[in-house]
Length: 94
Image (cartoon, rainbow, N blue to C red; front, side, top):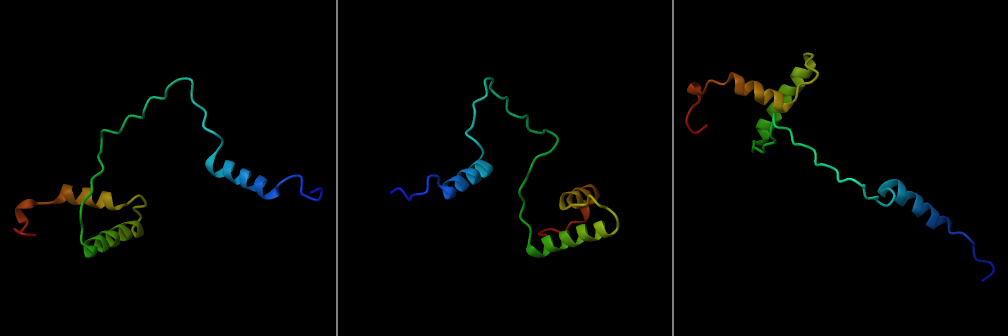
């Protein structure tokens, strides 16, 4: 028994990793933290699109970025389409 290692290098390494990835024990704040207010100028919605529509949308975003619209994204294209749509031209059952 006298030949046992006095310190555990694997245990020390695990402790370091545990602290780095999971942080030290949580400390309770003396004052309660107020929850962040949710933004009111937009909402997150979920819609269904066909794979071809998603591919087309991504192509449009890529083309806009190629043309210099560095902040172009799918939401912006959809918002632009909503601003530009003429529902009188939309066929029934589309």
